Image 1 (cartoon, rainbow, N blue to C red):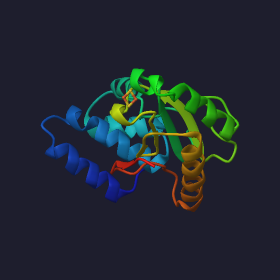
Image 2: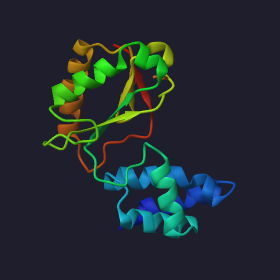
Image 3: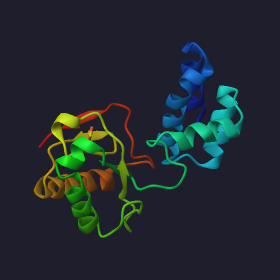
Image 4: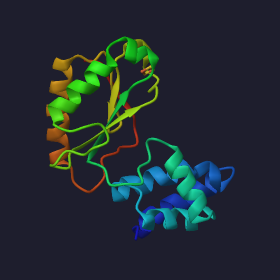
Length: 175
Ligand code: FES
């Protein structure tokens, strides 16, 4: 169950939208930030707020790759596997991350810090290879920069309070 303050805030955002559906992704991201992932409870709450059926909300939630219908780590690492990043060595960076984190793409680290997911273009094609950790974009990746980023992000995740790993503002970092 979400706190009354969050509910009021979401209702205001929906009221300000042209249609409730327009606010759906924003609402789902906020619920995800609250719960850490989109639980069945979150989907039902979103459906009630938006005036949609749970199935309609579930269809949206499973369509967008930044929305998670399964538990994820405190930081989700999206590694771009689209053409520009692939040409710049993205596949090698994904393999390095998997080795560094001792897991396969699609898995979560045993300490619950990271989930590793390949993804489509992150809109940073000129600075590939690119990954996004939580809401922070990192470009021009090298094995060395990845190691430094993972160390810092793990420290941040371990100091983080609450369940969610996502912040609303997107940041950009190119080491
Ligand atoms: S191809 Fe990787 S960010 Fe666009």
